[in-house]
Amino acid sequence: MDYFPRLIEGGYEGLHFLSDQKTGLRALIGIHSTKLGPALGGTRALTTYDSETAAVTDVIRLSRGMTYKAALAGLKLGGGKSVIVLPKGNFDRGALFEAFGRAVESLKGRYICAEDSGTSPSDMDFILKHTRHVVGLQSKSGDPSPVTAYGVVRGMEAMAKHLWGKADLAGRKVTILGVGHVGYALAGELHKRGAKMVVADVNPQAVQRAVKEFGCSAVSDAELVTQEADIFAPCALGGGINDFTLPLLRVKAVAGAANNQLAEPRHGEALAKRGILYAPDYAINSGGLINCALEVLGYDRKEALERAGKIFDTIDELLRRSKESGQRPEAVADTMVEERLAHG
Ligand code: NAD
Image 1 (cartoon, rainbow, N blue to C red):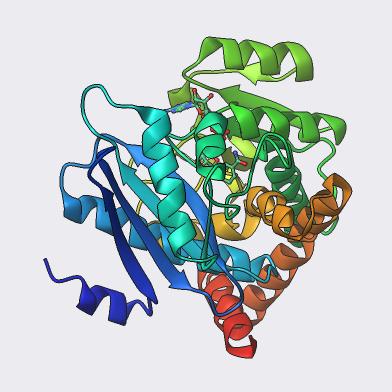
Image 2 (cartoon, helix red, strand yellow; image 1 turned 30 degrees about the vertical axis):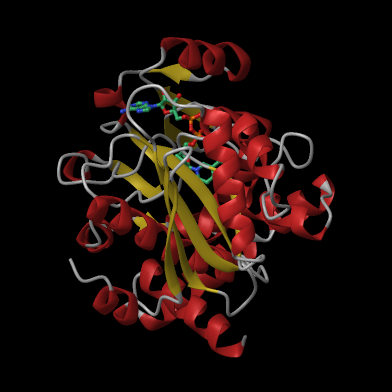
């Protein structure tokens, strides 16, 4: 597989292959852009990549996404991501993450890592032994989920303004797929605003907590996507909007925390054809990134919430421009990013 054509076509600055014989480290760091600042993005550590190409595809796709998310959130940061292909069988996890910390340090701050799928706060502590270019630490900004949820609910309020003339969610019915870290916090934000929530999760304990604490109604996954509601909030894994779920949806809007909500870009077009307003995932779920990013500048929770609250303005502008231009919200979001990148 030739990687250079893909890197050049996608405007990537670099793709680093990093290895360490002693610990068995095999890691990739993708740097899409450092135009607005150092490239920040999480570290995925998985055993499940079935080829080197699969790991490369993941890291470059995700690193580009981070450029877009940071730029749209108005952060002076670029986009990067890293992937560790974990050894199969027994290995010294601490030593492996220390080796990764040395690898991150070798890039001299062009890339800043954070927790992501398959990594934990203790992994970050091993990285921290060798580099200060790591954020999202338990001892600093901690779990970003409440800030992500706050950003999502502010984005929903902007959608309410466009759909119903008032940035108010009181009495609105919101279906939430996945009440884990973010979905649970989102249910709490919606509860405070007087919305009615219907939730589904494969984990019955997560469902019980949302029902007990916020008066949510509970249904199965299959029932959730057929519910008539104002807003559907995908907060589980990616790909929630797909060929199967799309024809079943009976909602006015889709706005949630999950990354890569559209299984394929054409599903955005299909939502628009069905008259369902879509808040592009990377525009509405950037609260977590904002929370981590503030560690670089000196963390302050109040400021993190204030900045995540500005997701209201971003979604508001995006929907206004979408209405004026007739372009779908995803296309407008991409244009807004390109404008921000062009102006530096
Ligand atoms: P999480 O693992 O804490 O929660 C996900 C929940 O979804 C879990 O309770 C899980 O049981 C449930 N789930 C998984 N598959 C399901 C299915 N098929 N049907 C129903 N429920 C299912 O993860 P999280 O941190 O809450 O993140 C949720 C989503 O938001 C992810 O896509 C993540 O990438 C994205 N996101 C999270 C943050 C953050 O701050 N945590 C920031 C930005 C984006």
